[in-house]
Image 1 (cartoon, rainbow, N blue to C red):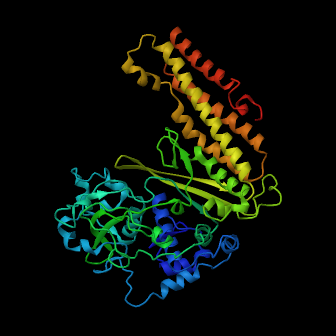
Image 2 (cartoon, helix red, strand yellow):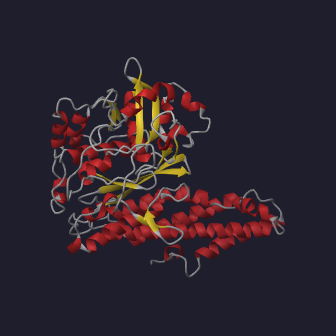
Image 3 (cartoon, rainbow, N blue to C red):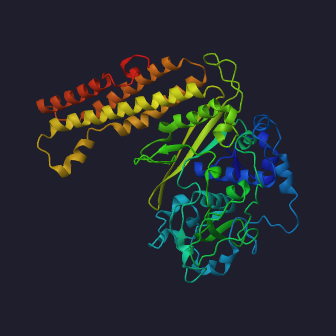
Length: 512
């Protein structure tokens, strides 16, 4: 059972791939769940040999309707004896049958399978809710299992290593996508989305990790192993990031008990991070863009367009080795679209990440950004300037809050300072409200509107809204001369900041 085009339908994987060009998308209860299903479908495509032969073939291959049907045929013709069953006693799909002797005694309730319901992944604490036996429907359990394999946070598993497979089975490493933003290129149909994200393969595609005990030799749990080499993209997209076993109810339509421990460790290289966008950390080093509860993904959207623009500028050396290099292989439109007109080819760049605080999953963050071949320079300019404007306005709000605080609390206690300033700090409201005008800015740019004119309108909207949020934070000030002085000082400081020569030109009503 999968959610397809916002409908919960009983559809097999064979049918899903066979009819992929007649379906808009698959859905999920969370962005991570949807990513996990797409990852599994990509793995099947690679394992079946369904991918473009070369980078030069890739743009045309993306447009081939029904190009994924060989993957459906491969699935339908799997040899007799190859099991694709969640509850097979020997080869359970996506699971480790070696856990079977311990499942009844050492397992937990099915809530343990669902990332958002576990809580702190240091599970040696007393987690009463994990004992709750409320069963999960099989389809929901399958998707939750896929999500655990790719997004499971780091922590300490509830399972007893001494009583089961070994001491290190309790060591939950962060799984492959658990520490970075995943970028998926979305097409108009599920079929196009999968083709956009299937890359040429230089060597063998590798085998799909159907179950723990079949195929490649996997890690043991007596000691922590080194990351194993990846055999190919089918192996990468289906790797078993958790060692999991599910127990079905008597009717077989639900899961009522789960055993979950550490899974495989991979030796990742740049080849395995083809969608990654790199961002600088505070210490000046770079790493793949990560999910943050305080810094929304749209504030780094310009990095996506920069990656494509750089690839297009080096077309003579473009081997299609990354998602952005492949997007640059699409021929640009001869002319930019007329204002209000959709470009000939439109793709959405969908970014998804899991925010975790130490070993606790906090929330999913995602964002969708428009892309059209040949417009990456304009989209980069709009997103970079849009982010720069929003950052400067946030800085002005911070300084305005400080101005209000310095008047309101002339003799503060040092320990009270941060909480006192927070009374007047409107940055939270500003960031929450700026996403919508940023989306409008990017949409207008994609539709051929003048970038500078759109940036001027965006800057005016953001600045006006921010000043309103600041005024609302100042409203609780007492109606005294000191309160009036603090209010005036804060608003004046905000206005002065936006008028400074180093402020983005758009905030001063000028073009950059």
